[in-house]
Amino acid sequence: MITLYHCARARSFRPLWTLEELGLSYELKMLPFPPRVHAKEYLGINPLGTIPLMLDGQTRMTESAGIAQYLVTKYGPTPLAVGVDEPDYGAFLNWLHFGEATLTFPQAIVLRYSRFEPEERRSAQVAEDYSKWFIARLRVLEAMMGGQEYVCGGRFTAADISVGYALLLAERVGLAPQIGPNVTAYWHRLRARDGYKRAVESENSAGDALGLERRI
Image (cartoon, rainbow, N blue to C red; front, top):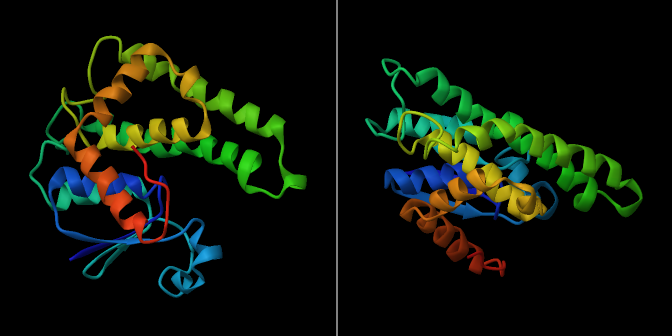
């Protein structure tokens, strides 16, 4: 049984969404955010105190995009993966990691310096600078989505899950109104998927026990 440690709306939504798209059985362990503060016993399982943590037998992974890649590779064949013999294999890997390293990273800085730091350490300038960074990095996606439905392979893949989470986070951060029409339409396609909806419901159901607000 795969076990996924997850916080609502955190990066761990990527592997959760992937699990639902694959139809795999898993145990979801919901934690309050940040767990290193509000669930200190979690440090005994993951000394980093970060989310996600996925356990699959002897395998332990903490990187959300890496977990998505692992799942679609190990539990394939599946159209969610782009094979090494396909022309878009390189694009698949690039977009898979672009979603985290290029799109999620600046938003994490925005959240930290606009909401998570103590009041005296917050910085409107830092938050604004990294918000502009995120929007600028979306330009390539905005141009590309004018002529195709998904980022690579001519189909929905784990790379779209990775990029899609960054767009989900943009809603939380308040950056969605600055996103262009092509990317906005792309995000609406992603969130209309049954796998996405099941992942949201799984998160909501697990969050009920913690008294968390449900997400639509």
